[in-house]
Image 1 (cartoon, rainbow, N blue to C red):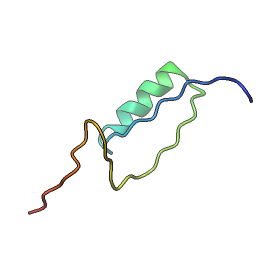
Image 2 (cartoon, one colour; image 1 turned 30 degrees about the vertical axis):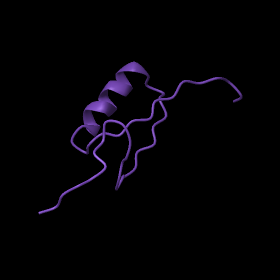
Image 3 (cartoon, one colour; image 1 turned 90 degrees about the horizontal axis):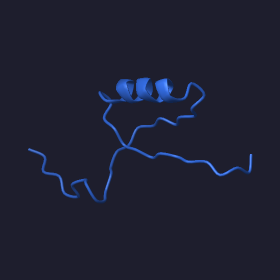
Image 4 (tube, one colour; image 1 turned 60 degrees about the horizontal axis):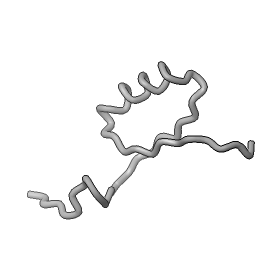
Length: 53
């Protein structure tokens, strides 16, 4: 479309996904969402080391 567009990239838990979907639909019924499973997230705000017991 060659138009400037704002995007949001976020990581949420599977429990949070229905609420996020509801909020997005309330804001923009035509919103385009890509939803996929993520195995690992690194960076500010996320723990880089995991301890499994």
